[in-house]
Image 1 (cartoon, rainbow, N blue to C red):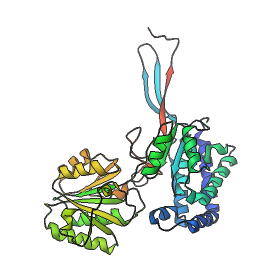
Image 2: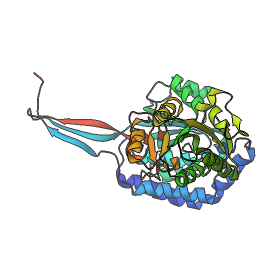
Image 3: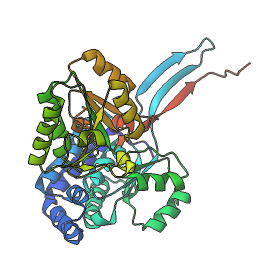
Image 4: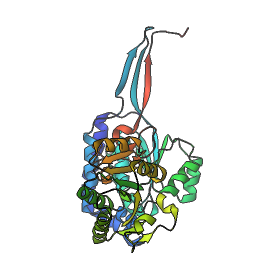
Length: 399
């Protein structure tokens, strides 16, 4: 796709803002069809599917925020002139064509597309069948905004493919693909990695851990745990596992206090064998596989550890490498934890729920990357470009 001037991109986005506001009733009505057809058994997926007036406002705000961000394309990274006279300029450049595969969330159809388009990428959107009606009307909004300014609808396109067709498309794409972002659970990620023939940037699962040190402020610990677990159970940044140091003063009393608080919020508690000696009425771990599980539910595993080293080792073994937190008043201990835990975001005395583009100052996000190349954490506008070298000479040859 050709490089578009910033002005034309921003005009498309301004039109999109106006179209979303004008069509909000039709968008919400289309979403109701998806909600009526959805099985409420999966509450987290249902929560992600809902589009209401607040959600439309958030979509509009996302487009507006990206519109006002600086264009990330053709920005100079470095400029070097060699002794032989060659001028080498490294600049940012679009990826080309991005495919994002995601489940349930219609707002991804807005956020992913606005980021890709502003960064001058073509984007192919493969949403889940549960959000089909919502995604179709949002695609229509995009196409109207593009065509209003004389641009092809191909910049933003919804793929209407079943699972087998998606598999074939990944193996033998009908058009060049430069980057695929699977945004979902382990099955989706493994499916894409197995069949893709281009670069894959993983937006990994959560399975986030929090460690309560013996040096923790207990009131902070409880508040952070409750927020990280209950604020939004469908978020990939929600808390799943809590490790508590057995040397915490008044350990048994505090465990029972935590149980009481969690039960007030209707959180199901699972415990390891050591904690079960104190919280004897709670279900104990039956299958070690639960340590790898992202719950996406009002469910929390609580386990006992003897040291910071054991906590770090446990987190690095089982977590999704998304977000991890330590609650401690010992700053040196906190730094050791944050340096040694292998996660995209590490927290000291704060909720994991802040791992979000808007909360971390990135703005709208395409996904939360748990890969280490080319970027880790929230993928915002500035992360949707690669780089390109422009080399200017005057007949130089290598000798």
